[in-house]
Length: 290
Length: 305
Image (cartoon, rainbow over all chains, first blue to last red; front, side, top):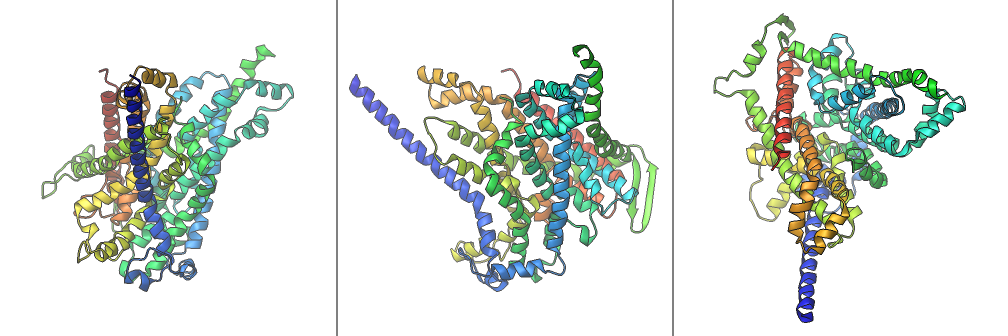
């Protein structure tokens, strides 16, 4: 009996080790698949056009600063301006989205009023309507009232962000005791001040995660901005990248093209490298309830 | 104090919710209604001339479903393209994510370096889709590194023109979508699995259930709500596919419009011609397709077996 048992468990051990090795191979393969294109991007951003045409290279070739200078001072694609524009739009959108989502969630979380249930159900319902369905009407309004090439039509809609609202609401349910609000009231704090000075600081982790997510979403946003921002000096980074694709490709300095792409994704990449742990945690916190 | 509470604070609920509702009505609801309204009008720019708006009833919809001289109905073709592109990316995305989620949460396997792997596989999700697509275009172009490698290794004497063939273009778009989303799905499904009562796994283990049995009898049924949620959100996202194929094919959906998606079609009507009538009709159709497919997926996955 004992013999059979030990040989059985030994066989189980071997099988487990084999399974583990296979899993690691799969994980490494997927990691390489994810990293390959970005690795090539970084390598190729260090090579001159001639080197790039000449053949493949797996290691950097030392022309990074040269490419950076060429891309930064390019006459047709003003990437520093694009980065600045994108930063302004994304930061403003992120701040508005996060603040007003928290405010809305608090309004529904903390107060009892007649339409409370209805409004909550309503916001949940509009979450599933694809955003692109409003695009045609939105573009028409902007052209009709001559508010194309302005940023506020891209920023202000961020006030109504159902997904971020839902995340905030979930977060409040887990961390926000109403006794604190009651105590603030006894101390004579107004409702608005209570929210800004007591509630918001308690939501810090959730606010940080949503600031990052809404910033990234806005930073990467291409569809609507490309329809509304037509003046060169107003364009954001994704529009400039798409412009690279439509330009006469054969005439381009490829080292510069790789550098443009690198500059477009670098800000998000840097933030991610430093905050990946909390960002990954944030992916699940709002969408899945136990 | 207590008595006053309900009376004096209720208005604050309305005040705090008001900005959201106002912004929604102005920036989303009104444009949506305008989109639908527009779909019944002829309203576009022809060169410098503005045509319409003239009420035309359902003419735009009729036009949308009228075959061209080759007998092709564009919107059906693009719906097909969109679904194929979505499925090619989403099926492996969900299967691989499910596998990885099980591996990561398995105590028996006890995978090390999870944080590293999660960080790597989630990263493409945050990358600008248009830049990612442009990067793939340069990497897979005739003089790009992939073709250089293929030639250096002697797999082919002439460069492979990835952008001239239906299968390679669709394959690249799906690969990008897969890479951008499987990490995200893995993390969602992991949270779902970890939310399952651990006692159930222990009990199954004690009863001598195999890993496969545990998966099909415990993990999968209990994971179903999250799986359904994941599939439906992936589908809604997939139907809105735009950035990747638009940049990769420079808006043309090459070759022969086989990678043209619904939103690229919408984008064409909203470009120079500012054809709000046809754009409205396309939007309404996209909305209807999204609704029907969501319902079908929801129903079929929630069927009582």
